[in-house]
Amino acid sequence: MNAYLLEKLSVITEEEQRILDGNEVDISNYVSGKNFVIDSAKMLEKGRLISIRPHTRFASFPEHRHNYVEIIYMCSGSTNHIINNKTRITLGTGELLLINQHASHSIERADYNDIAVNFIVLPEFFDVALTMIGPDNLLSNFLISSLRNVNGDIGFLHFKVKDVLPVQNLVENLIWSLVKRIPNYKRINQVTMGLLFLELLNYTDCMDMEIDSNVNSLVVSALREIEENYKNANLTEIAKRFNVSVAYISRLIKQSTGNTFKELLQTKKLSVAASLLANSRLSVNDIIAAVGYDNTSYFYRIFKEKYNLSPTLYRKMVK
Image 1 (cartoon, helix red, strand yellow):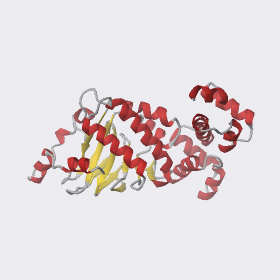
Image 2 (tube, one colour; image 1 turned 180 degrees about the horizontal axis):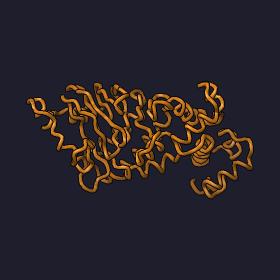
Image 3 (cartoon, one colour; image 1 turned 90 degrees about the vertical axis):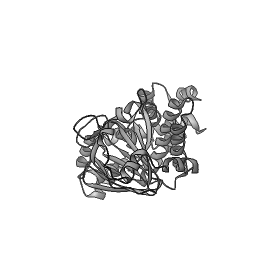
Image 4 (cartoon, helix red, strand yellow; image 1 turned 60 degrees about the vertical axis):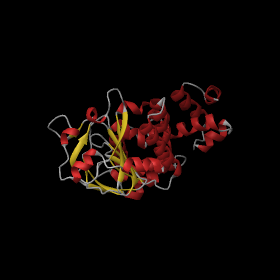
């Protein structure tokens, strides 16, 4: 991380000094009511949709929830987190943890060199990012699940991406912008978050997540199959791998994401096709083959249903 930012974030805060002086964490700095729900109104200046604050060291934080989406980035050292009173996560340097606002969260004591940044983000901040990453993928499903509270919601996403330079650069850009409050920061930060999410979608193999302890591995495998092998993704093969029926895993996917496997896969293929139309010189027929369709007429029909344009007209519009 940039030396200036790391030095600025490592400075002992007034709250941390009070803790070092023998005082307990003042919960009133975080919550407005009796329930231990950390309140965005306490964390954000009026009118702001996103802010950052260094994680408070030298004290543990008991089980709590947030009324916002929390993203934690580990600048140096490590921190230990318990999600939903059952899953223990060690967040290492360069790693990201996204926590659903409906998940419970506790944190073990961090020492001086364990420097983390907490992004406090209201859901509406993600409007631009959602548009950029499109629907029906791991991150969009996470954000949407954070707006509702039903069984099967994604509790957290843990990205182990310390060696992924584009991700590290984008996170650092976000921190820099929020620390320095550069002009036009709002739009810049929203677009940067969208770019960060697009990068993270390329590294789902470096990710742990929680949906529900009973269905997590099945649903994650299906979603990863779509993200990483959309051309040949096959639900039957996933069902065989886990020795379950196709009907059973189909039902779990529908319950967890709100969409069928076929719908998720089609959305992914069309999203890739749209990107190739906009950013490559491949012919339409080559793109159709690249995303795994062999019926040209069918592809044209479903593409037009989604984008209200034929592939050819879509390319002309976005070029």
